[in-house]
Image 1: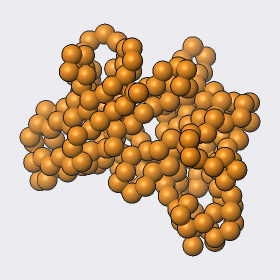
Image 2 (image 1 turned 120 degrees about the horizontal axis):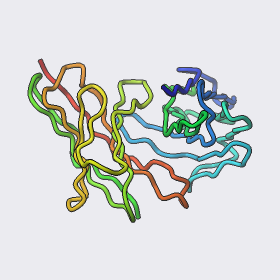
Image 3 (image 1 turned 90 degrees about the vertical axis):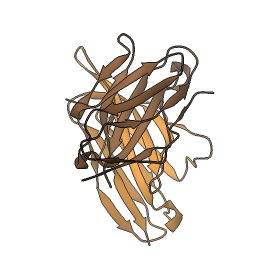
Length: 118
Length: 115
């Protein structure tokens, strides 16, 4: 089945530094990647949608200069939290959608990244 | 506007009893509906989906869901709950293509199964 590998699983960084989170589709080509943010025991909030080779489309209220998304290849998308602050601490999850041969893979989620900014 | 509602923040069930986690939706056109489960500090695991066809959908780990168009519901069910089913459950609907086909999630229901 489809697998999306997300890492790191958890990261602690100092306020003001940048953190990069990677999501890789291991056995299919991810034409679309979705990035979500989740607060404890709450639902997933979509931050942005990226299609391979295109600029990401950000949801209303999400700062695109703060949350940089790159989807330069069909198997890799990255989310960079720039100049992180404690309020950016959260659980970030990616989800990929794509194909491999004649098979379609929809909405496969990574395992998430717990970001703590101190 | 498209939306998903999970009216119960928490559902408590005794092990061995049947469980139901409720979900209602609001979409234009035919809905694509999904159920996911999330364990602490983990991503979402796919349980099942409804695209078209039989209203009763069978999924992973013994779960099933019934699509009811007249009631705009897609409740998740399992005949006999296990303690290991305790987790956070999300219902989701796929937005229309012109909205990028993103998933719109309900607020989640925490399922607690006691021995």
